[in-house]
Image 1 (cartoon, rainbow, N blue to C red):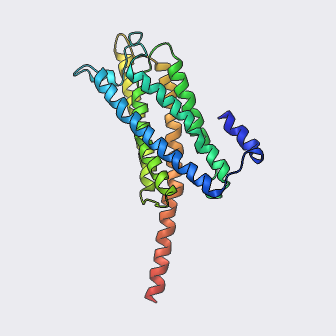
Image 2 (tube, helix red, strand yellow):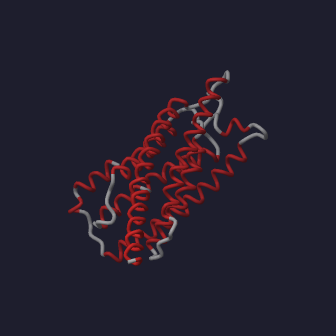
Image 3 (cartoon, rainbow, N blue to C red):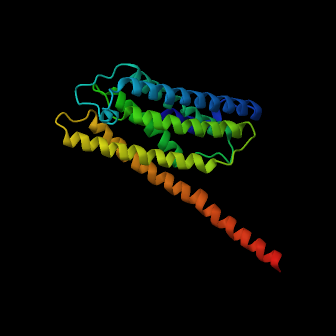
Length: 243
């Protein structure tokens, strides 16, 4: 995200686009990421099914340490997933170019995009395979199908009513990944061989926890407070009508 920070610093020197052109670029960008996320979620899931032996569900969350090489279709899609995180940096660039009050860069946005790319890089740079790498890729890609579909429809002028669903799915994703990581740690501590990539997994658990807290705070500020304000407005309206 260093390039993004530089783009913010030198934003007056960036090329300017008309509102129509920027709108079209944003629409195409959201559509591409929605389709890519769908492809990754489906193909990575199929790779997991093909790779896992029958009745050995432990391998879904625990790759045996020093016994699993990062090769094959599963890890191909893991690398593809990492490249998609770099492509998502365009989200930040489009937000800068839009220069809109309704679309502002937030700490959550910057922290989320930048740290996910770093975690994916650390995971793939390891000589051994990373347990849970496919779980993160599948859950995140699945959520992004919903998220970028929502953004695409908004760009098309059709704002869906399930905006809160996107945030709830993201929160569910972090909870699910954290629970799976706990199971991985259990297998790592209770089996003789242990699980691969536990060091990076611990860092990932910390990151997921921080994102969970940030998204819960975001949900509280953007939905709970809005519901309270709406309820108060309805009560005032009903009171006025009763008089």
